[in-house]
Length: 375
Image (tube, rainbow, N blue to C red; front, side):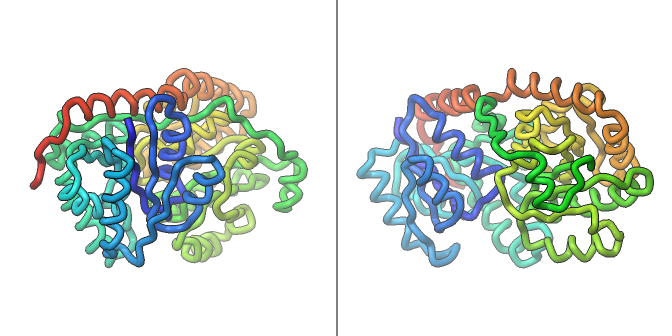
């Protein structure tokens, strides 16, 4: 089966890794990725030797690209189109009128919160996405919670599939020397290190974490928090950390592959308001690092509170601070939790299982064909 994926190309987080993992680990199908802007995703796919085509849009409403995508679909005999994200979903509304293949979109997030904090983008882009989503034949949600969300918003339950993220547990990168990394960021060799991998966006809950850090530092001062991720929210977070007088314990490192930072961490945190099934907790599990995370989305599918990590309720600052302190006080517990998390993740969320689930869904969709959905 030949499958075409359409994605904006501006993604730097979970949806980028999700797509690249799927395409690079698919053994049965052929995949073409259509990328709408030159960026990290496009360059990374080229380096990986994947079939990715750059069809640049001048802006979100540039529909000249539609004919180019239609031509490729027909020439390459594409049998299914899988969209990822709002920009791709918008184009699918027009593509669907010219192609007779099934259209599916992967739901990577709560699409009504994608532009939270930006009134204009929420008003325009979120609502456009909300409308065009109704015209897809099928949906792949990256957690049971996102399937439930779609059903509650009156999408047909029978046309929604669920595939949790998977990761390659054999690809462990430990090339970097701990001492050199710590020296680079002026961190004492005996300091505890906590890492958070998340884009700098209000939905990721950095302010919630910062409030908890303020309490943690009252008891345990020799700890450094590495923040991996970029975003327009950075200046506000810098100002907020200064107000709380915790900036000296933070390192804003920008976007990086998280491996070397996870490798030197004692454990990780994730304080999101909303999530699907975040790759960041799988990445931590790969390096046997336990996680303190908010109990949102599919996080509890992997993290068992008090067994292989800790779950907290979003906004409960004292609870978050106490769970962080519990691990800072007890190195053995931290290591045991990390080992258990690794074992559970490796058994249930391998990239091989992830790719097979997609393959099975594609076969089922092709057999069923288009739904005739055109609302």
